[in-house]
Image (cartoon, rainbow, N blue to C red; front, side, top):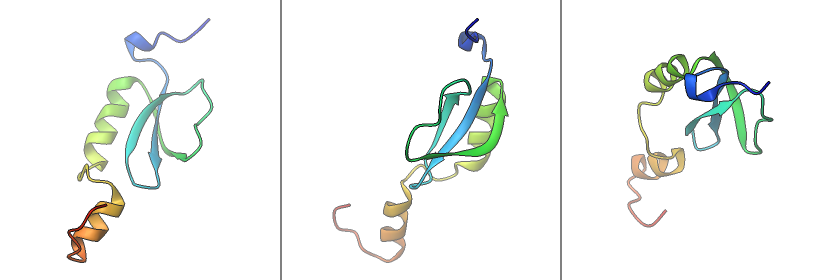
Length: 74
């Protein structure tokens, strides 16, 4: 029986090298380029984790360029 994702069952929170987050069904393999954060559970729980940890939506590379004062193209 497949999990009922519409009702919020069985998610994991993933993060990539650019420190962007994603919710992912926990029954699927983690896609290349992503890592588990350690947060797992119902959709609402995972969304709360992302809200708490993803404070700046800009990709890491852009944040680093902007902090160095490099405002050119990414």
